[in-house]
Length: 290
Image (cartoon, rainbow, N blue to C red; front, side, top):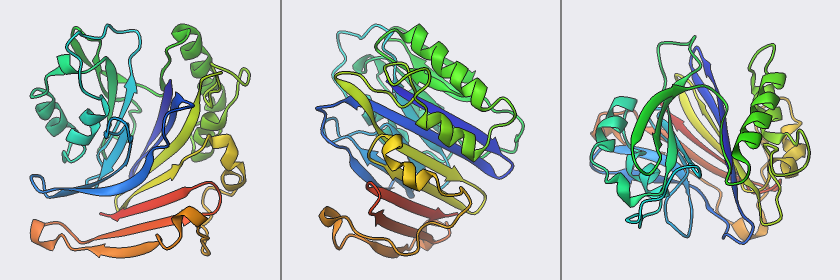
């Protein structure tokens, strides 16, 4: 019950991810900065309070991982760990090759089926496909995939077809920041289970995450509501600067801050970390300067 789309650019990529969850599931913790002493790397990711894992992450090298449940697979009897722990464990890898190397050390039988997407800055700016790792509960398959990638526990083929048709219609001329945003807001063909912004009796789209990576910066923008509820923000021109006067939501009072991360000893340039909350929906912007 999730959807990912992306576009590869001459300087990097843009990734968008709608997370769909059951309505009673606790609200995820907004993205925070995590540090790996082993890799001397920092990564940004939201955290699911139940499994203490994540479904999307990006690190200072520009490597992004996002995970979708693979409901059509067969869950092993030995599955006892949250799939989100996979993202959390691999989020600090410097490149796709390192991710695959670490994958070989995982006991996949501990996890229910999933699809893991891997995005990283690449010299090849023409190909739009990216590597994906699919675990169906019995075997692992690695193959290139093109946008969009989606999952659903209900009528998967219908959902997949509808969302692919919506994406094709919106991007028929070209894939742009605007068309990707329109796709993740979409209620086509109707306001229901097969739309990208999904609504069902017991489940719905609960957040939208956007990752922007170019040669200078890596940014993560997080919205902890269905995209349609942030329509006022998304109607702003894409290239318009982010709000200069950010207002705290009451529950986030005093949490806006700016710090410089000193990573010179690790052999990488210092990073600028920004954390801001906006009054329009729990808007979170975090930035790595590469």
